[in-house]
Length: 505
Ligand code: FUL
Image (tube, rainbow, N blue to C red; front, side):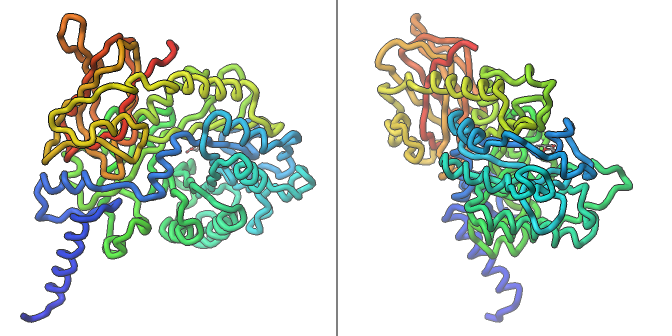
């Protein structure tokens, strides 16, 4: 047989396609010969990387917007702010981390530099930083104190570094990338483990403004090298912006999306650790991953939603918002529409010019924790007898362990799981989780209960589940319920099911 470059390419293609069919990756190429059912099967086997999985399980992430805007009472600084205005006299990173830990959050992402370019650490790259402020006579380092406080309280630490920099003289030139990389390297090497790097897409210059010459790929590679466990979020390949700033996930929220700019470099890397490409397209669209969308894709990637909002109207602190802080109940509802819609919840809590999280915010955050504790303390489905005619590992659905799961026999993509509770119970919240280390598969499900007259009635229904789906409904009192999976891309895998009674809010 004559060996040509085409046959080598063909062989490579077949081998890589075979390995994608057998193993689990967080991306997969789609070939022109793949039929719609083969594409669906591929989609059903795309899984998160270990770093994405760990991030997803954190559920609650705290965002801290703090900087010169805290002192000018603005949302966006223009870069001309004097360093001397930055002086948080009662700054206490311990109070931030303690509050956030007590509220059950697992990570703090700090705005180390916002669009105004002011750096909260004594960077060597610019004079526009804390080192020229009166705070601690210019000897302080907010990033150090916050990262140390996170370590003390056992929470992860992430950095927000705004690509848009309205102060830097390099902005709009190619040199800006060198400047930016130096800042990144300082943050990634001097503060211990960094769990997340958050790149903002915001840019407010007019049509004649400076060009955004960002070398994202170079930045991503540096992060992978220096902090391989860090999730690169928002303008990054590991976690996507959900598409709004109101803490609202989609009713149908897929974590497997088309990735059409996936290139050969990525495919040959063939590793869960080297995905450097962000999917293209409009991430605000309502439908990001349905069958009709992925059928047209050239590749698929695990790209989960990060759902952000602020506890106040603004991202930075404004005293006039002190009495408009989101209540514990509102935060609980946002938890249901973020984590409960297959996302993580990134909640911003901006400190005051004193350098403290305001007492009203603390009260809401701790009340939110109490509401979650009250709701999720007892799984009312616990101890139920599980029946399913085509199920495997039925009891694992109630073992409290995320890694173990129920699935169906043969190639069955539909099933009915019946639970007989130990006694008649009253509940108003369903929690259901797919085992995403196998893939996200469920496309349609329903919860019914058996009424006293012997008829089944639907309580609630949904489309996607993903890592977690929470559905609230009017309280139901029953002894028998059934979860029907009516459409799934491949055998559904359900880690856990829970029935809860949430306090009336
Ligand atoms: C936006 C920014 O412009 C806001 O100031 C804030 O940082 C928010 C999280 O992202 O794009």
